[in-house]
Image (tube, rainbow, N blue to C red; front, top):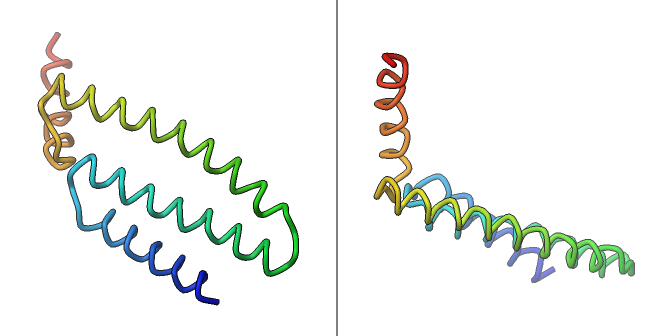
Length: 105
């Protein structure tokens, strides 16, 4: 029961971080917290039901999550190097400013 409460707490912290933060890296960390909480739920409920399928799925989920995180981090690095933007709000403003310039050509 303690692990379920811990998982819900981690999930809540991740959701609050995703909603309130606008930095790309902080949002990526918040997404990682959400996926870690979901993976923890698979392990906890699998152990409560005496089924090892939850543990097997959590290993699969962690490996897929590592790949997704690597791609997201690479995109964040490219965005920072090319546009020098870390704030998501600035990124959306930057894309809105570029659309009229592309339509003129």
